[in-house]
Amino acid sequence: MKENITSTKAVAFAIKIIHLYKELVNEQKEYVLSKQLIRSGTAIGALIREAEQAESKTEFLHKMNIALKEANESGYWLFLLHEGKWLNNETFSSFNNDCVELVKLLASTVKTTKANLGR
Image: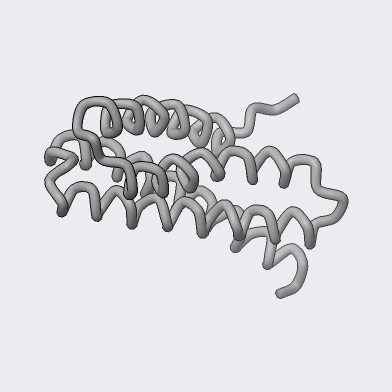
């Protein structure tokens, strides 16, 4: 079976998010934004996995669209954590770059799938 680069990157992103969440909660006592981030950041890969088992191209497109929304949302929570000074520039940049890459990959997949469906 061919490796799905988007799925692989989503899993790696989720693992990084889990470690960041632990740090934010245990060391910085930040509970609200970090909880939102862990939900959206780990949902991306789960939705891609669901899409891989979709029963139709329409269902695949729907799941990938939701994954794209979760990636965008993750970028928002990262931005707020950075602006609120919970993330330094280097950490934010690393996570944000990963997030932007996922958004681009997912947006491309959604666009291609829409074109194949004639939408």
